[in-house]
Amino acid sequence: MTVDTLCVQGGWQPKKGEPRQVPVYATTTFKYETTQQMGDLFDLKEPGYFYTRLANPTNDAVAKKIAALEGGVAAILTSSGQAASTFAVLNLCNAGDHVVCSAQIYGGTFNLFAVSLKKLGIEFTFVNPDAPAKEIEKAFRPNTKCVFGETVANPSGAVLDIAKFAKLAHKHGVPLIMDNTFPTPVLCRPFEFGCDIVTHATTKYMDGHSSQVGGCIVDSGNFDWEAHADKFPGLVEPDASYHGLSYTKKFGKLAFIVKCTAHLMRDFGSIPSPFNAFLLNLGLESLHVRIRRHAESALKIAKWLKTQKKIAWVNFAGLPDSPYRKLVKKQIKGGIPCGVMTFGVKGGRDASIKFMDSLKLIGIVTHVADAWSCVLHPASHTHRQLSDEQLKAAGIPPDLIRLSVGLEDPEDLIADLKQALAQVK
Ligand SMILES: *Cc1c(COP(=O)(O)O)cnc(C)c1O
Image (cartoon, rainbow, N blue to C red):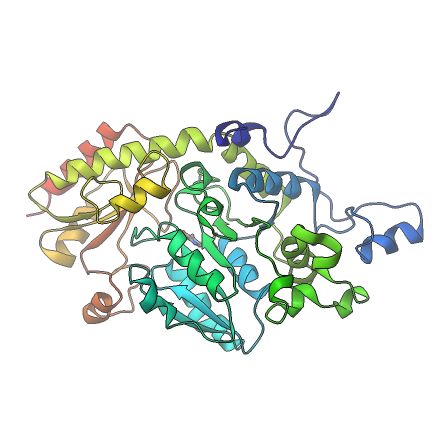
């Protein structure tokens, strides 16, 4: 089945007389008939539901759809994209471990890694993803446990060479984790280029209607944990909290996701509400139609912006003259990576602010990648504590505007951009 069909029918296949739409199992718990039956569930001897903090049938149906879309063996939904990134790393790393990470990542993920996980004793080395493999390789240490990056970075739009990073990770006996939020599996399937684990902020295009916050982790099932047992004792060696069960021995290719559920979700509890999973599934049913429209409209608008005398620069990997053109052709189906771009208005910070304040259709919100077009000014919003000098060092010019192109008529959006530009003196 193609991704388009899986968007609609993946994960939930009703049988005779069953509901067409995945039901919302609004229940914390599930009933059993004998003490032994429930005991077997606690020991992971039998599959089954017993408490929604660990697993819920609505969530599982939606996770199964996303696993199918990515071409993975299993997936788990989380309550946010941040929770997905946290669990993906904590499922592999303990205090004293190390991660090689692309420097071009979402600001929230950067803070999570550089500040919060560092406090827990996990160290991150941030590398320039565009650097040659030899340069990036210097970041690896004996205690490196995984490599992390974004397929298309938010907000920089950098496209990461997945095969280059996968090769480096595998050479050092560790998996590559990619945050695939921006292109979604409709436009990019990282497992096809050697990536091992994918994470998502389903909050963005997958939901697509700014209706709920959520995340997902998908495992390809390809990484051989037992071949690197010394690095991943948590997956291979007996787990004392399950009577000495080994995840790889008992669950084979499902080991990573089962451990994530049975261990991290059990202890940290970042499960999404089944109702949110239901909303996410509605979004997924049209993801393939929506994301292509987002991408095509964004390309039209990026091309128009480039013709405007008052626009200083436009950064969009869908443009024919993008430095990422070759990578985009290789990794992105259809050649346009998403609907998000950045640009600057001539006249710097003040001109960009005046322009944004003059927009009428396009809203100022802290969000991207949904049906409603929106803009954000990192220098005034997400990065407002930084000086102009610090902004430059972080690769965020003070005039940078992030535009997320929605599903409105692109001609209406261009008209709005045009009238706002006219307000800039
Ligand atoms: C938004 C975002 C996240 C975080 O997701 P939340 O659902 O807001 O926690 C992670 N990665 C990327 C690329 C994002 O855009």
